[in-house]
Length: 250
Image (cartoon, rainbow, N blue to C red):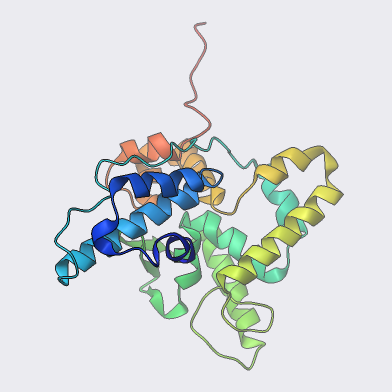
């Protein structure tokens, strides 16, 4: 929003044209993902403005293409994952394992609550799609939840959020970001041979790792179900990064 206000705040609605949307995108070419998100936000705001009677003009974003984004091909190997986890703080270690075992987006992982666990399954309403999942609390996920409950009990502050900070309060996006950056720096110092791979590791990549590992063990459909996709094609296109295992000719 701050980028949109800096560019459009003084502009009368009836003078904003498609060329200005293109100009905004070009001005923020160095950060294409941010620019594209700004364009989507502007489009949403404009549609609300039309509905509220502020303008009858067509949405100026129509027909204006955003920046092309390179598809991420990063697969976080077990070696890289373990290197970062080994030096992570307790809250970050919980977050890393929870995001990987559930395959959920960072925002959905942070919103998960203990009281969402009913009849042995964690109910998650995905923020991006609204899709509801129930993830069985079994295996390593059950062990993780039990460990977190023990840590929660050690703090006077009581809350229902599963992932918490060191002080027992709910973990925020900023806390997660800070702890993750510190762990990557420490892991790079401890394992210089993995420096390049650690640098390319972003927290969001754990969703793709979960998909890839689940696909290898249980098949593409199981991976798609874990991520909450309606079509397995979406999982294959965006999250399966290692490629299919095939056998040689002979």
